[in-house]
Image (cartoon, rainbow over all chains, first blue to last red; front, side, top):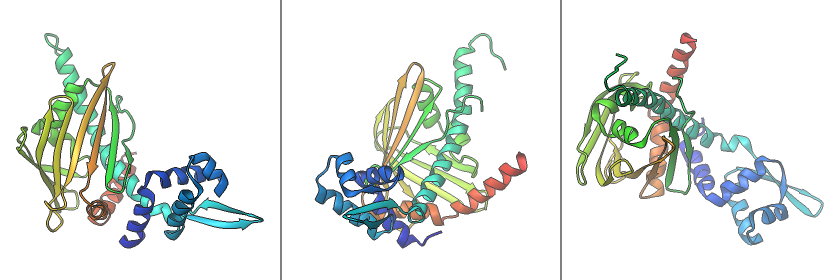
Amino acid sequence: MARAATTTDAFNAVAEPRRRQILDLLAGGERSVNELVEALGLAQPQVSKHLRVLREVGAVEVRVDGRQRLYRLNGPALKPIFDWVSEYERTWTERFERLDDVLEELKRRDEGDGHDDE
Amino acid sequence: MTTSSGTAKVTLPTDTQILITREFDAPRQLVYEAWTTPELVRRWWSGERGEMTVAEIDLRVGGRWRYAMIANEGFEVAFHGEFREIVPNERIVSTEAYEGIPDADEHASLNTLTLTEVDGRTTLTVLVEHPTKQGRDMHIESGMEGGMQEAMDRLERVAVSLA
């Protein structure tokens, strides 16, 4: 597990909605800056700024191919976020599964007036 | 068990927000009842993590709430807060402070529960808003370092042994 500082940095970088959109796009494969600009409908300087932040925390990597700069996801850098979100999700999933059971009882109580199924 | 509506969905809409979403196969007044009645909260809030020892809810604007549980590992985890806005069966805005960190109230989040019903099914969302990014980070770090991993590992072992 990454140390807290690294986690925090990656969280901060990834929490921004536009940057998450970029990551979503890159999850589908390598993309050039132009392709990202087109897909996002943002001005190129904005996209470049977001890409710089993502690169700084290691969430994306870049390579030069001829005249193009191609960006791709760097999975391991995103792992701390993934880990946290999945653990947090599991906490709530557990709670909600128990809540499902409570709700079933309340439903039976409300429907079962007069013919209680004990 | 048969009515499980899948996993909770967690997203991070902004630097300071965490959003939890889940659908339930029940009308919203029942979800609201299960969410706000201490005896019922005791049955679901701790999930598989431990036993709830305190569930106090003074459900009125300005009223306070406090939940505590003894985790399976033996340590106590407690949260408290104050109700800010209440629309029965629809919406509750309350603060939430994790008692395991210094100056807990200063770092309290503002949580908004919303219940929307369509055809007898209810979509529940909880928006957790931290006053600062540091607060959000503390929330995340307390989850990562406060024995959560141990709890999860333990849960996995239990699940495997039951399989």
